[in-house]
Length: 86
Image (tube, rainbow, N blue to C red; front, side, top):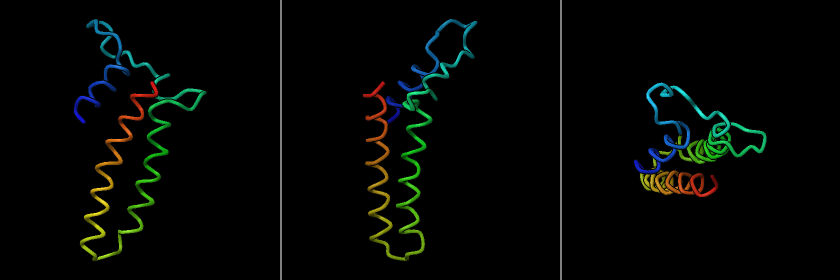
């Protein structure tokens, strides 16, 4: 996961010169094609919240454990998908 986050950082801040340290490629975050990282993540967050709401009120330890196992895999898959598409 850390390597995926670093790759995203490199994509968003592509210029490596000191005088460009604050340059952000905004088109990678949001664009008309709706393929920006922010746009993709927002869709995925909605799925996470939907699943969370399903187990939020339960005291069932197994359901909660299943949710966290699903969440770990889902977030990993989201990173892989985003990096594959860009």
